[in-house]
Image (tube, rainbow, N blue to C red; front, side, top):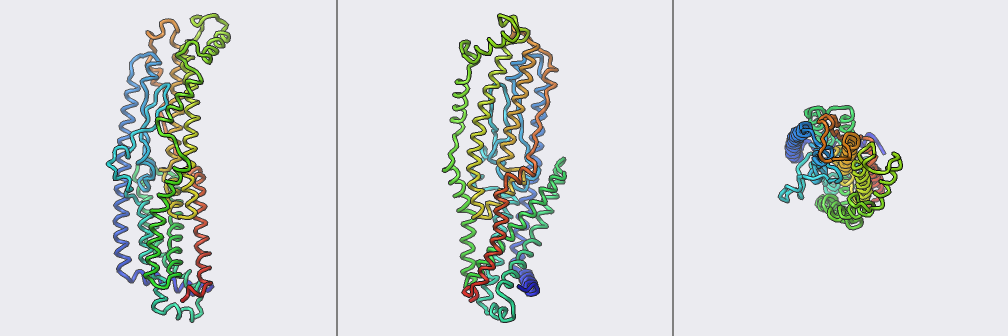
Length: 479
């Protein structure tokens, strides 16, 4: 392997691409689409977050302005929590349009996140949304194919390959030179654009610029650089194995269809088939069934709550509920809350485990399709992945439980058992309740969650160089 030959060939590839008007015309189209996707995505996320903030302020104002009430009425009054878009969601929409944006929190009931954009769409959403991530993941590989399909096969057709091989350049030198030249073109055209769009987008969204945001931007640029290198090596390898440029183009288009349409859809279908998840009605019915088995607080003869009553009387050394220094009704309600919350969390964890198993199919198939790998990592780093959504659901449930428990504590200590329903407490009791603040998944956890996809990208890079070395060792591919 001669580095000097590799440099010369890479430089020649660079010059030949920029001398042609067709690649520049195609790039102009992709540049326009990318900037348009970035601007519309940023505008949408900015407007969405402003609307969510206004709605959150309105809900909080209603909560704070409640009159003096019985604590149990306050618990059932409920509280609406909204999910804001992550700072980088303007770049990669991920699952944002398919999962809910708000959840109603109330006592004795665990509600799921609702009001997804897909639920209000007219069906066009299934064809995908225009985002910069979609342009880079799907359209840029097409661009690489159209400017690189003839890179080696064309040399065979016009006889230049034989001349180069006669000038002490090895076939591996030619393949590496073509790969590095083509990769350098793609990196120069798209990576600065990606970096600029991400940086400007983050800075333009108020309150989102941080060191973690910079780390996410750096990781995204790095991984897309690896992704473009993988696609470039694939294009060069196919071109090197093809006898004509026409054959190379046909094979590459078929590979593009396989990688970007067939395998992703098959991965989703296979995951749903192997790990079938219950629908919403079955999920809620299973929870209600388990709760009824555990204990019914409305049934005076229920064994669980009969034991609670006897143990409470024994604890305080009294012989009747009315003689207790605390409100026994609040104890019953909190115990019911403990039961329903524990059972909900158990079933929810099982449901999430099923969905994670479905997603794992896609992660494993990323070893056969680099598009799946970059798609998963892009969503993880942009905060629009499945794990971020489930973390929001878990944090809202914890907030609901803690808030209900706090209100039950007020009921327990400030409301007397006798004539319970006709009593009220001061408004300051719920005005002092803390607001909900979602804590995003840290970048380390995002990378950990996407370790399979990250490993797949690295293996694809190594396999690409090994494939080029193998092709260069076969004389049949030099003719």
